[in-house]
Length: 546
Image 1 (cartoon, helix red, strand yellow):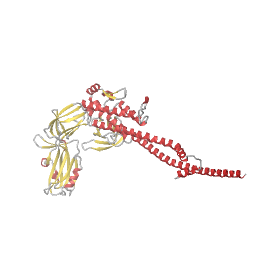
Image 2: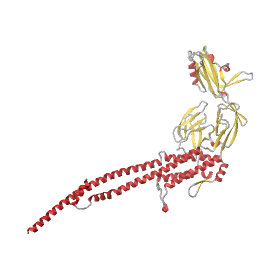
Image 3: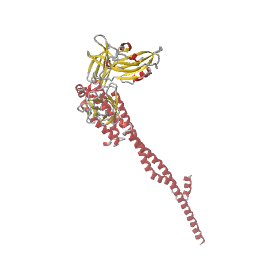
Image 4: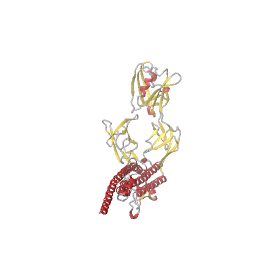
């Protein structure tokens, strides 16, 4: 309607196309600004799309790394499900096969004291002593007991009125034994007592009663009468040599491996360890392909556009350039913690070509694998071992942990320990020694097991190339540089859209302002034209009358 009014006024006014003039003036001021903001939106949108391609490539590389990890080159096999073998330190494993014969498995001693009317039946009073050791028959076939010199003799007073349940609770609180009251279901109750496994963990109870009843728990002469199961050691024949262990989990028989025995006596089988060259070659070749594809994508989106070529959407982007540099640095970096000398990918047959891509040279790879297959652990598997006898270490190492040798120190006076200066929580173990949980620092969550008397140890950590590469991908994706760059670009789009909306408002205001001024101008011109016409007519009349 405003345009119609202006057009109507314009018939007697300046004669100019004031509506078109208004649009031209507004466009001249606003359109360059809109074009600039639309360019910002388009460029940022294109950059986000390219970052999405990089993100997808990184996620694909992580998936590939997981696939490689799921097909380890070091394989531990067993011919019987009852003889499980687990690799704990790949650096100590060589290609070998061992024969395993199960003579007997380790057992706990089980004692049953029967015939009680209820769980609250009185047990008498006096003193009860518990010793840990081994039962055996002497030359005359008489049962004898030898106390384990490393064990603690427990002696406690049983007050008058103590019940069977209270007796079970008292025994259950002691190290090396568990006890509970059992409802037999036939109107009677029993006290069941179970030792730790191993022939040297059997129990002997000696009672000195002051109130009748306590002597029923004395096993010095009646052990066989109350024994449901005798304590015994695990006995294995390893390559024909008999070995004895107190428990069915054995971690000191095959260096770098743990055996878990559940097979029945008489079982004969083999366990084997091997690093497979074909698997290593396939894994390494696949890894080279994925790394090359990732570098190619980074180069594509960041291409400079030289010699007439089209530049990439992220040309000159600092985030992408930093990721390219980090990846190149990782490929060339030494891998520490896998022996005295660092390992390089080039040592394993992976070379960098003139165009920057990686290539697996078959002959060089095979020669390196035949010479020392353990070195390939530096590519595929983290290494975490103690260099001190008797000290064990386990746990998942965080991304910020550095490869190399680290210090475990325990104060002999206080018993408190540190790992690289960070505090730990010590937890006593029933078999002696302590487990120390690292509470702070890059190795927080790590568990160090140390026997009594060992106050310092060297812990070697080696981060594999796969682990380091996955860490690089994770750092870029999960709240890292790519996420932050996408957030920056998203904020840029939001800001540009806000400015575009502001420009629309500004354009409307400008149009209104121009139209208002042109309307006033047309009214003035129209008035001036009317006055001019009046004067012209008046002069004409004067001339006629003269």
